[in-house]
Figure 1 (cartoon, one colour):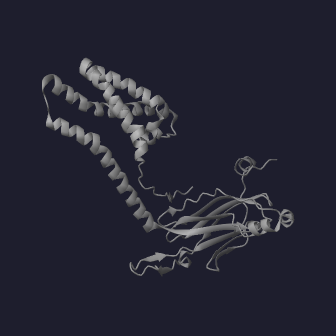
Figure 2: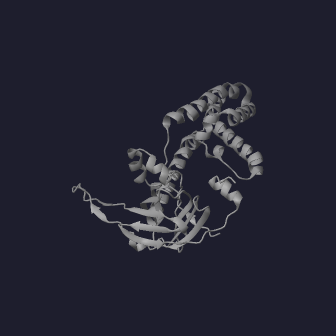
Figure 3: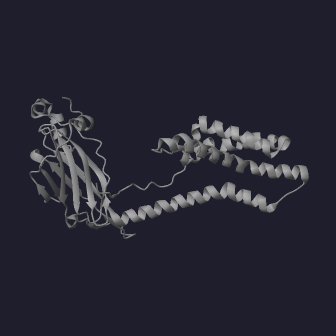
Length: 321
């Protein structure tokens, strides 16, 4: 099977400061203040032991950490990794955070007991405690803007509307727009395969319902497709025919012209792109037709079915025999 670089939506970095304070900062401050008398009366060794117990309890029971520490949400597929490395890495990370926070109190105890103060160690502690989270935020923000820029250069937005005849029951399994040269591919999730009425049910339904379902597409969403798409992969199951179709069609990207229109706000002289709708209609006998701007881009009226096992039919499409 050919591998393509799938489109992945770039998510901006967002921080809920209220949750951050309640889930991370406040518990960390409380843990540090509790550790202060341990440092003062029992020393650094006892504090490490105390922090180890806190880290074990936090990793095991405290769910608030999982929102802000990525490794605690890691979903490794390797069972060995999840059962051995994952708990150890989580524990070490939490222990390191607690130790860094307590180091400031350790410097305070040194000053109180021995009148020793190291400006270098104090500044290093502040830099690690506050600088590392800030650097992480800057890194993730830069990563987001870079990914967003790359996607703007390689993908374009278009509204995809998929429909079929009212008396044709089908479920779409997959649809991909592919640039085979750069090996870029869309990642379209078909989540709302809308049930269509049979002709008998449609006629007997109320007029308002008939108008609603007659004008509603089975799938209509804003999607991202690669620039210079040259191939489309479509697969679906036709319940009426009890057939599975999987086709590969050459696609002419040049027909997808996105017209630029001047913004009504002349003051800024901003130009925006008007997103058009690309229609896909599916027929009996594996027929597929793409429309754009009232033009037929692709017309493939008949396609050969693809054999799949009865088990796959049952798992994917709920077929019971």
